[in-house]
Image 1 (cartoon, one colour):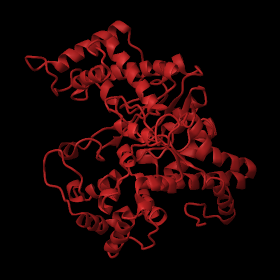
Image 2 (cartoon, helix red, strand yellow; image 1 turned 30 degrees about the horizontal axis):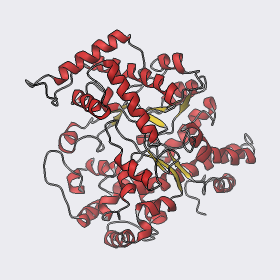
Image 3 (cartoon, one colour; image 1 turned 90 degrees about the horizontal axis):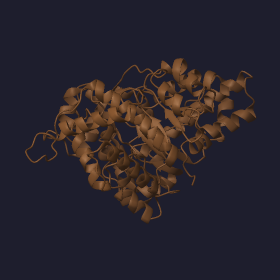
Image 4 (cartoon, one colour; image 1 turned 90 degrees about the vertical axis):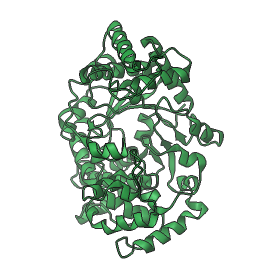
Length: 485
């Protein structure tokens, strides 16, 4: 066993080694991520190394953009019709020429471990070895044991949750279920992500609401029909294995509007959004409401979704605090979700009070709250999770899932919320082949953290061994309700 990420002090490092053995071979529970389910549904061989490793990885493309290497040079598709590099070896060489930019970053750690542990490539990566590593990796991708479903077994994945809009037809999950890979109790499950239907200031909102009506056969021109259609789609998602909903709002604001006020805002926004053509055909207009109204409606809908969860059992996940598409130039050329997001300061204590006042002690309700603002770990999130049975603190994500941030998170949260008001690790990734590496990093960090407690005589070795197994496997399985009827 290597000592990657274990403490430098010899005695504590020896304890970490022992604790790690209690977690290293446990199955992986991946209850929150963004892997394309089509990868597993089709089980086709992966494309070339560049399109597997570089093109979809926002951590990689974002870093190179900061040094003037535009995403189109890395093969990232453009929405403006501009030219994009299509030669995978040219993309790979461009990446390798800038490998020094990743020194000390989690991206380098993940990539090096992916090459070594997933693809069994021992050649150190760099500008001089780029072609050799490319050829070794390309040769692996031609072998059947490196196809998606075979890797699923190699990764020791027990459950993988993907994330879909209510407008998704779930056909890929239907294929997985038909093949014995999906549905309730299946290995690949979906997650209900309704942001595109509750963000009124997201252009095209009204057209998407109309599409929701077409899918469900319900009248979504009324507020009551809109709620009924969302509730129906939640049941469709549960049939496809969903145990959670996920909400990526700009803030953590929650709060109920009166039914009449919600109805008036919804129907006015819908009318304004569908206006613009003589026959009323849905178009893609500008935002139908202002920012304050959109925020109020999002806050209200979180309360409505919490109420729905009392009936259908979906665990709510709340991911606030990202200024989406902050990089306007990148958004114009390459669209949404290509690495242009920036963290913002986020308030939780007052924002979550309406939700927790109404549902925080209800045994049917469960909410996992994440943040990109690590200053809230000690001040807000840990005390809230320590005071309300329904709330759990989610693992560091996006900009905070590096080893250093994982250690800071444990230190900040454990003193108030303990270990058992946290929800275990989530990889939150689109990069399928990085999943086992990210989980291994988290398990190594936890082994080191617990080893320190043992070395300081604050925790017995037997308790630490039980705790690391809970953090790695038992807690996420329980809290996210995966693998349960």
